[in-house]
Amino acid sequence: MTKRILISASAILISLSASAQNAPKYSNEFLSIGVGARGLGMGGAQAASVNDITSGYWNPAGLTLGVGDLQLGLMHAEYFAGIGKYDYAALAAPIDATRTVGFSMIRFAVDDIPNTLFLIEPDGSPNYNNITSFSSADYAVLLSYSQILKQKDDLFISFGGNAKIIHRSVGSFAKAWGFSLDAGIQIKKNKWMFGVTLRDVTTTFNAWSFTFTDREKEVLYLTNNDIPTKSTELTAPRLIGAVAKNFVFNSKFSLLAEANLHFTFDGKRNTVISTNPISIDPNLGIEANLNNSVFLRAGISNFQRALADGDTTNQKKVWIFQPSFGAGFKFGNVGIDYGFTNLANQSNPLYTHIFSLRIDLVKKEK
Image (cartoon, rainbow, N blue to C red; front, side, top):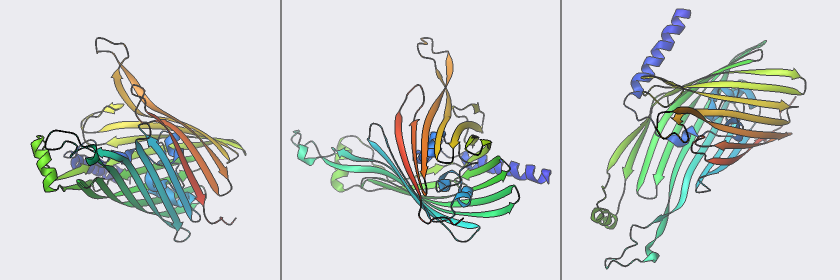
């Protein structure tokens, strides 16, 4: 059995590495931000412990653990001083005692971008009435399914998957469609939790198409701009392994600690472990639980090597990371979470406030 597991794991890693070689390192990056103030407050360390509506994003296997009835999730965050808006909405419901389905939608957009293509008249004078606006928006729809495989004594095993549809648009000029699959598994044993998530199993293919009017083409040509036709963007698979433990001190206080490892297979990245072709990036998070009503959270992620401040020789490098903090409150069937995180890292901070709401629409029977 051990040999079979090792052979299967090796085959998966080889397959992932092969499929990632021709894909760019960074595409569909809006899907790397995360959802839910709880997860973002814990630095994205969620794959092992997540068990609510946000499981559709972090690990679809966890959708069964916490959704006993119809559950709704909402989140809003703003980046770049309110220029970029990030919204998330999700709904999950059980099919029966062991199976759950979910629907999630993510939108990350910059709206009201000035279109100055026709600002200058043929005589060279500016005409500000010709300025219009457009949006650059990224959308993702996740259709999730999860099922309990085993539930006996102190052992709990579940698995799940996502069908992921992506749509990206830049005004009326450019549009792209993409599709992929995610898969995950969770195992709970006593106070220990383990999780594995495989994102973009099939590699996400974004097929771009471009549309310009004859007038727009003329202006682009006169200003020495290339006019694109079609292109394809690929998102390589990513494997996340996670372990968590819940330290219970008494009936009213416990502390959850989780560590995630993100494996990428597209060559060297600026991560803690950087090899060719595999790189590994850790996420660490903790959550203090007071009477299952008040929660305090913290996490760190996005470890990178950067030049030290004040180093004029450009030779001294230090480790930097992305910190995050958060809190949560639960009132009956309603959970309100807050997160404060740095979207970038310590060398280029970009802090933002995140709020999310979770509602159990049908009260769970005892």
